Image (cartoon, rainbow, N blue to C red; front, side, top):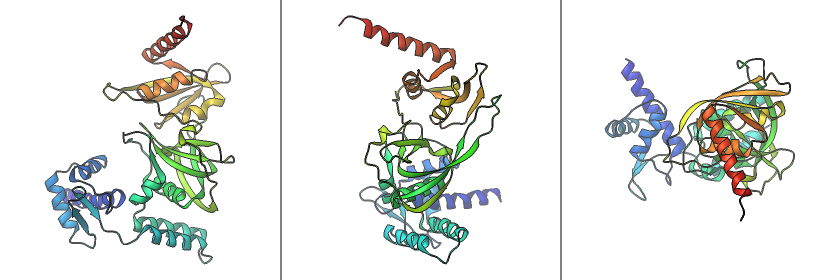
Amino acid sequence: MEENTGARTRLLLIVDILKIYSNESNVLSIEEICAHLENYGYKATKRSIVSDIKSINTTTQKIIYVTSPKKGYYIVRDYTLSSIDTMLTALYSSDMLSAADRSNVERSLRHIVSIPTYDLLLNTTDRVSADIPHEPASREIVMALRQAIHRKKKAILTYTVTSPGDSFSSVEAEEKMEVNPIRIAISVNSTLLVFSRNNPNQAECMHICRIKNVEILDDDAQPYNGDIFDAKGFFTGSVIKDRHRTAGWVFLKFRQEHAEFVRNFFDSPIQIRKDENEGYCVAKVYSVLDERLVGWLFCCSDKVETVAPKELRDYLTERAQTVIQSYSEPK
């Protein structure tokens, strides 16, 4: 019974993966489908996936295999982007639906049409790194943000905020803000939302894993013509791919007014407590010790002090001394 249940779940996951990541212009190979399944915790072989696809094709879902421009599979869709936009526009302009009805219909509509499509991904997302992040970001949140960006609408974000407590067992609170969503930016370790608020010429960024709810408004978003790299708090750094990257607990000290600045850099859970020095606090976070973290700490050394681990603190000190020496040497 357990094997049958697992097999049925795997079939549903294959359908879901193909709906999200494939269409006529962007097919998935067997290897790519295997990789996506592993992210869900399911191991599969090429033979088992081919068998699964044959089983799926006996239902109302139809999966097509093509050999050009590359070999792979995509799932047949019943809706185009233009029809999706028409339906969503009609949904938001209807006076016959309550707010709750509109929310329920919109959620069902997104599920039926399998947003995002390939075109929607291209129109709302920037890849600023070749690496695909593994981050606990909600699929529904990402889909809602892409829809807001695509339709050029404002949105109200409900996001987490960490306030320093007397110990590291602090609980995150939630706040709301109205934003103009600009782009989703996939960086080395994170998936960021770039947005603006009152000033359309000043962009900011936030880790999508911090966003707990997205309410798309009917108001048009203010356009932004700047570079997403200029967004406040945006930092990619660089990663040496051939270098072994370790992970460990990192402790940072900073003034309390910089708590949000520090919190927004990490996509992993962060705990903050008040320091014995009034006006300061200490953050505890489990992070990859890579060049991105080192670069950020080095650039933000006027705001953030590295307390531990000692190896990281010593490395930053050594790098700072090297930079100072290079400026003091005669040209």
